[in-house]
Image 1 (cartoon, helix red, strand yellow):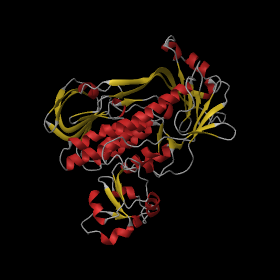
Image 2: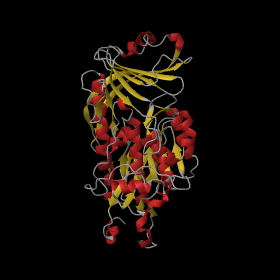
Image 3: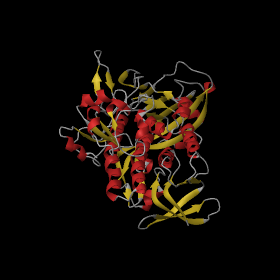
Length: 480
């Protein structure tokens, strides 16, 4: 029976990200995927700066960047085509070291994630393979798998298994976790097209058409790709809605059939839901297996990548040291409240697009002098977990700083937490303490002075674990 450190079920963006983050630390990994190859057509089309920072850690940004475009933001317009809410994404670098918002073609990302995994000798992939059942043991999980092509059944063992296998997750069923519906369920048609030539009249931003009769979304995607989504009611025939004549009639205000070719057309049931349980022993859920949200904020895939980033370093710690149930339990508690806030905000956005909600989608909506409303992006903190909840900096993202040699400070703590101490204490520290002082990176001193903090512990997933003022030098013991 083959044994692995980690088994990952599902080879989409969440599974591919998690595999890469763990492979960087030399663990043996098996990826189990029921499909024979990756899906070649568009699905997810957006991610943000926080996610690009994870891709930077993996080491794919140099090659992947050319397959992306910077997203300029979203406008909400009413039935008279008047802008009722603006959600701009400024073209400026954020604290994460990247632009706030990007558009991409999912197959491009999956190719880069898979290609990167080929650099690691301890990564194995089984495609056309499904998981039939699990048996939890004291220090591992026995996994019964089936080759779909020849129905051959075999057994493998892994110290941990993560289900990144989507909304119909087999792993979620195995741990008997139930989905909780959070109130939004609606059928939408999704149509992806490729323009035959550039059409400058089409918007260069995402447009949400707030309309009770036919809510719709337009997305400006990479290259000549464009997407339209529109709500359908339960009485409409799905076959009729997906007919070319119906689709081109819907697209008439924007495009003629001679101007673009249909790449993909399908119907989704947009849902807001979350699993009540994300973990059972050494078995975990991540991505769509753990939560679902409508696409109005473009945060579905982002949430899965955040899951992977949070879970990877905790599993790595347990593999290098000893299994810690207390540490691993913080995965759900920290991620749950974060993703819930995204889901609730997305649902409010969906209600607004359906012209049944208000523009107060977040607490970050303001009005300009001419009365137009503008919205800012949300950045939820981590939920209760590691660190003290009364630490106002705990759970916030730690900015990306550059070292004086031009390299990223992120490289110093991708696999273990990092202690950062104000340079004024560097001569007082014993040599055995592994730390960096704030003079090492550009702007770090100013950042700490602004927050009036003398020391930080930063986690490998770029969140602050602890912050403290060293009024008495002995208090350093509290964060070491």
